[in-house]
Image (cartoon, rainbow, N blue to C red; front, side):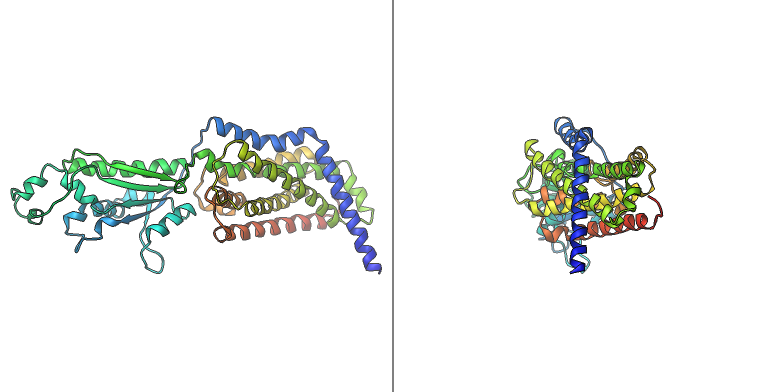
Length: 416
């Protein structure tokens, strides 16, 4: 009976403090404008006039080569000659091999199929797929000035196999599938256009390459604004780090926390209620910002799992609450807390893939990287739980570690 009364008392204390923290947040109109206005303003600016750039150390690509399918010996068959020149160039050219990693097989040794390759691009485990069609080399060779001469036997040794062939003429074609990242979707097609057209010139072929470029999911036109929009949906959650630290540090500075230390309310309830209030507020932010994506005309997958997207954003809110607790435990006042918070917020925005992709090892320790890539896969590509479960687990891990660390620091301090 006594334990039941104690539990009921603690729950009442917890609920009262949550209500108090929500009132503080809602009372500050300037803070509300910033928390909602900043991500909405970013989304509006990007929807009207976009400009961003990113740097990549290397690009992961797959070449599906149907040009060699009917060749008994592709290395000596003129009918597969050009496609082999392309793949050999990726292996032998030092500059290309440093910038582009060519993947041709799974770890178990089985060849990657076109269907598997397309899925890997949609899941962003690959940057692009280049599909070389059957008769690719035949079309190129059949359009050269020396092909007819070889058929008539004028070129002598080495060209005897062409005498009885019937290669078609015209423009060779490539199909390229890339992620919606604008840098990737420009660089990969440009590289292959230049490479193939140089080969055509070298073979005295006056035709030009025809490239079919597919960006993002098949049948879905994806702009870079559409690609970036899922990241805007968690900007408000990220900015809330500053709001939480300001609330806690204001109470520290005004002596409210010292006075509460003299009451039966424990520090764990105090911190938990502050985090819970911010968590509820973030849930509202997420709903509003997801809804704004429809207003701004974001092109989303028809298979969006909004429950999964909401859970990913909530887990990131949990991470941000932990970071807010850690920052506020060291800051001396609200102004210092706000300044410290932005030293965390800005790197999370720009290095976590919100505005552009940053391909570097150190980004693996940035929580926003995982929520950005997971939300993009769910909202833009219509991915399921199976695709993003690792991101969910990683975000949960970050959240548990940061929140426990923040609570432990507060609990150990003699004075807060």
